[in-house]
Length: 447
Ligand code: S3P
Image (tube, rainbow, N blue to C red):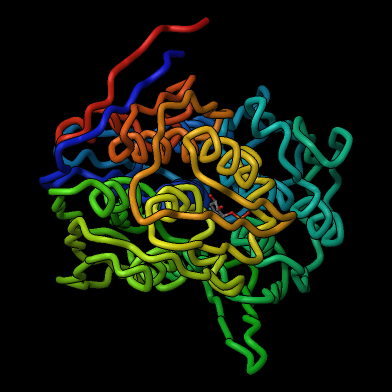
């Protein structure tokens, strides 16, 4: 682990390469492993979280290979619905919450025992929200206090179809239940209070499952999967990850003289709340060449520096930009007037407690912040703050990258204590950013 220091940039310009979407990459591997025949994935994210999921799926009997090429193609030879094999050792998902939670769903409907664990961040995250509905379907779990990892899954191929009404709009919980419904006789239904990202549903359909999504008049979404589909190996093209594109995007908005082009970025409407928010703040973002692949929309985004104004981000928008609040907070710190995040309590149970990590880091950089239990107000002053702080990454890639981006705009450089978490979603981030004009330097290696 090493520290990184980000100095003021003279402008971010160019076409940075944005890695593949993390959410879609996890799902493409899992569905490939659950399908019959070969799945070919282009644009798979080659980062720690996805390699952890690939490693777990190999231990469960799937064959997964990377072939050289530009871009490389990942090939998966699956075992068919319900065909995963008992792993010979513990499945270590590292930092990957999506990997762990979605796998629990898959494993619940397989008649063997598996043990899942992860790094210190993942072992601190709540799993009860996934475990409880799967127990109601008939699986057995043993977890640490508070439903934390390591978790033992005692699955069964005799699950009862689920009917779950979720309290929180969580794509991970929804997906775990739908994946458990794959190897379960009958129809499994999940009702979400508001639609969350629908990559699982779109990809399940792409692999041949029967899945129905109905938007109800009160804003809820009802999703039903029919069990025992014959999933067939498929071709998947993964768009660039909007959650990763968000870093150069906001960096370019903040640093004078910047203009960047971000190609083939996934703009699934259930993921693109950040674009709407930045546009409301006055951000210059032009969307062009919109296309669709396997139900997933993507487009090119041209972003240019300009002044931003503070806004209120309503609670209802949170599911569509849940991972983008840390980087949005950096934009808010430079915007004119207060920016209010409402209904963001979920940020407390991400890779770190992101509300307190943002508040602590910004305050150290000279920004006034009001932290509520599930809200945050950031008082921007219409200019970049002073900076000059050492910010703790807290095992959280998005906190680390967000503060490095703020450092590109602040008067004094901003350091982060630990660069390692960045590799979970965006290996090559520092080189890519420096390639377009950032000035991020490696500091001391710490033990
Ligand atoms: C994800 C869903 C979100 C998000 C996470 C990825 C997914 O989590 O924060 O980074 O791929 O399904 P929740 O479902 O817990 O909101």
